[in-house]
Image (cartoon, rainbow, N blue to C red; front, side, top):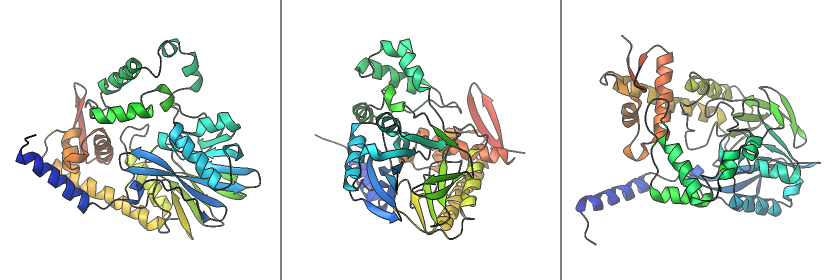
Length: 374
C-alpha cells in the first residue's frame, strides 16, 4: 500500500521517541515473583494494562490471624486469577485474607476488594474520605439498571456515549479514545457498571490513627493530592512507609483538577512536604514500581517537577490573553500527551495560581479562561 513520506517520518519519530524515553519502573509488566520486602511483608505484582502502568503492587502483611492485603488490583477475572496464584506462591489462599487496605479510590487499587469481602467476609480499610462512586445497594435496586443487560453491546455503547458527551468542569468536551482502545476496554468490562463498583469500607480511619496489622502498629497518614482520599501507612518501629500512589519511584503521580478540594495542588504540596519529616525511613513501598529508600528526597523532586510546570504557565500567561485550559495544556505537554488527563492536571495548576492571586479566571458560556492578574 502506498503511503506518504510524512507517515514514515511520524513513525520514525515515534520510534526514536521510544528509544530516547527509557521505560519507567512503573511500566514494567507484572512479575510472578513474590518477595519479602520488610519483616512479614511480601510484595506481589498484579497485571495492570493502563497507560503508563504495567502492574500494581499488592502487598501481603502476615500475622497470626492470616494476612492483610494492600491494594488488591483491578476488577475482573484476570486480576483475580493473578492474585490467587501469587498468594498460592506465598503459601496462602484468598480465604486467609482478613483485611483489605485500599490506599485510594482508583480502580487499579480497589478493584478486587469487594469480591474479597464477599468471599471471605474480610474488613475493608480506607481513609474516611474514600470516594464511593455510587452506593452498592443502589445498583441492585435501580430498575433502569436492571432493565439493561450490562454485558450487551447496546448497553456498553450507551455508557460510552454518555461518558464522552459530558463536558469537563472547564468546558472542554471529553476526548473519545481511539476505536482500538474502546474495544480493549470493552473486553476488560470497562464499560460495565460492575467495573465501577467501589467497595463499602468497614473501617474508615482519620489522620494519625493507630492501626494494628501484621502484628505491629501502623499510623494512618492522610495524604490528599493524587486523590482527596489517599492514605499512606507508617510503621515507626521498622521505618516502613506504604506510599501508595502518593510518592512513586520514577514517575510523577497525576494531580487532577477534578476534586472536592478548592486547590488540590496545594494539598499535594503539603502532603509531599509532610513526607520529608519522617525520619529513619528504611523503605518506602509504592503502589507501582520498586521499593525505594529516599522518600524525602523523592518527595522534594515531585514538588520541584510541579513548580517547574507552574513557572511554565506563568511565562505562557504573559503571552496568552484569556487562555483556555486547552491552550495552557498544549504549552505544558507534548502533543502525544494531549487529552483529558493532561487538561485535568493543567486545570489543577491554573487553579493553584488563581488561589495564589496570580491569575484571574473568567467563565463564559461554560468555558473557563485565565489571564494574569493586573
